Image 1 (cartoon, rainbow, N blue to C red):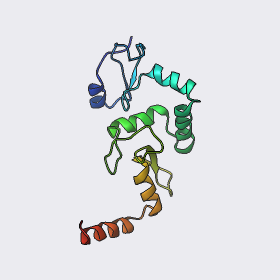
Image 2 (image 1 turned 135 degrees about the horizontal axis):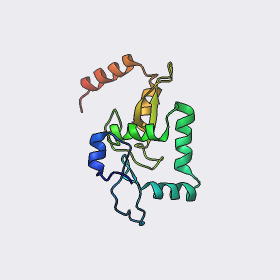
Image 3 (image 1 turned 180 degrees about the horizontal axis):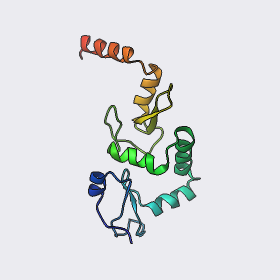
Image 4 (image 1 turned 60 degrees about the horizontal axis):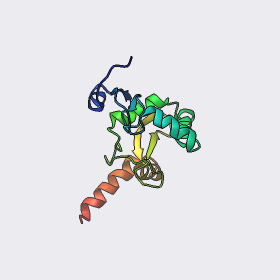
Length: 145
């Protein structure tokens, strides 16, 4: 039997899943994903009915970055489901600029964190250059709006 504890306690413990012992909206009594509150059974049902979009995303994260689904959700949990740079909450809509993207060093391939699409594209577009980022900060300070 799973230990029963709240999402709040799961965030404190830093665990990717938690178990409330209560049914979700669809009646499943199963673990929930800490990062997005989803019932694991609902997640599995959605993966089977939406062509496995979430499952494909997690398989892509595994093959490109070597992260298991638990590691990925652990990172989301540690970041409180928000971008590591702008701190905006992530959305599930890939067309939205706040969709989560795994950020990594292009030299070492080491995973650094999870960013929203906008922050990830900005860092990548600037070649991860600290000099360019510092110049951008100076520029914005000069032209305060």
